[in-house]
Image 1 (cartoon, rainbow, N blue to C red):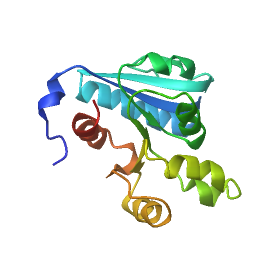
Image 2: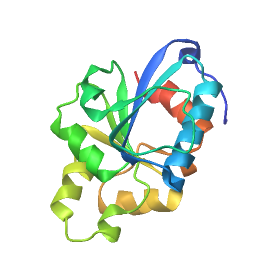
Image 3: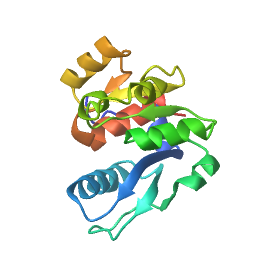
Image 4: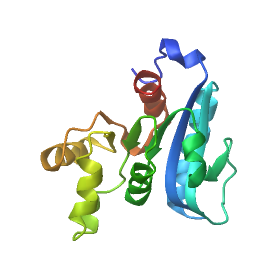
Length: 167
């Protein structure tokens, strides 16, 4: 049930989201708006948004943002939102759980880099979160079964997922 609370919902919990580039564009705006809603919906959830490139933002954040180099200091799990940051996190030997929430079928949009995609999608240390059921079925057929489906960055579904699957 959307919005159902678990025992962990009233405990402080750290979670990091990682995006390669943040700026004044629709993708950044949509993601930040939903993370702002998640922050209000679950006030005990400590969200940090890590980035590699930061440009001017067109929306105010209700959570801290830091360069990706600081991610190793987070005492919590990380969710990569694009293939380049998923690769970077993997190379950093991050100590907590890693998740990848692709917004597109990477290998279809940018074919020819199959070895890069294999390093993420076939990695036992990275769990995949599908953005919709259709992508989830495709990801499962090509790579492995996603651990969850969260449609369109839905903050209520993310709240439940984080409460149940993250430390």
